[in-house]
Length: 301
Image (cartoon, rainbow, N blue to C red; front, side, top):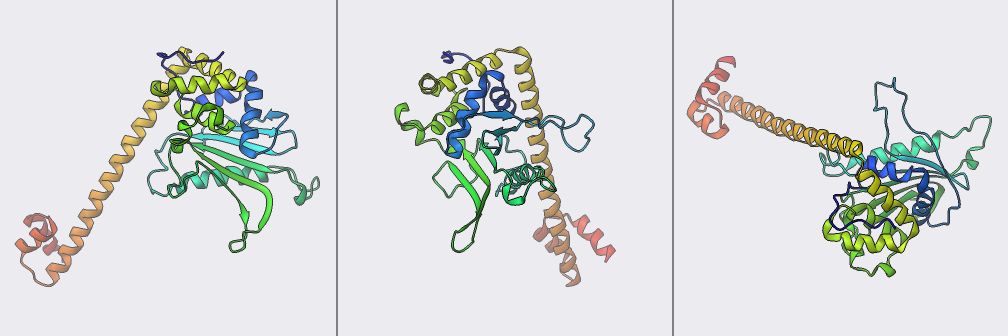
């Protein structure tokens, strides 16, 4: 039935590779249809997966992409991705990199349609970019689903419905998990599954969610199969180690940058004080430089 054993170590479906393995599996077609239907707000009856792997010779980007690219029955294009790592996104505090990447994926998807000599621009298929995120992007909003389209800045009038960008913040499910499963929406259930499947404290709730939907039972079975595959577990550990090492390296570089920045500011202040003929000892005390460093600066002026 896809239920997760209460003591089994489960790989997180919020990992981008695991996310893609589940949703692109041949047995998961109805699950993918159900997930997309719940996000775009209409009943999807068919979906076709589209290849999005990069050529092995491409030296600019990784050869494997973990977003799920597909086309639904009305011709609309849908791209789903899972963002769990905060390595780059956290650096500016505004998540500009993640937002920019989602916009890039959306515009690249929409502009990939043949137009010249084949279609009119007003007849291009709709394009949806859907980004699941394991952390908070919009702290000022309570909703865990935030959708964006092209609208007038003042009146809110929609320019076109040709493109749509949706963020599903899995970090904002505190109120969702308080609901009875019978009161959860389809997207609530999927979000709980993605966020809490590996969490033993929420395992009972996740199993109730899985039990409530046949498509989630399929997803649960696939997740267990992936989790028990030693190769996939080794890949997951390797990727997690790489991400952790990269995060550590970035933090070290950031700290070194701050130290270098402080040193540059201290030197600049010391030079100004030297030009005002302030005592070397006083300059050293005010800037944190040694007297020898201040003396060397004085000789260089």
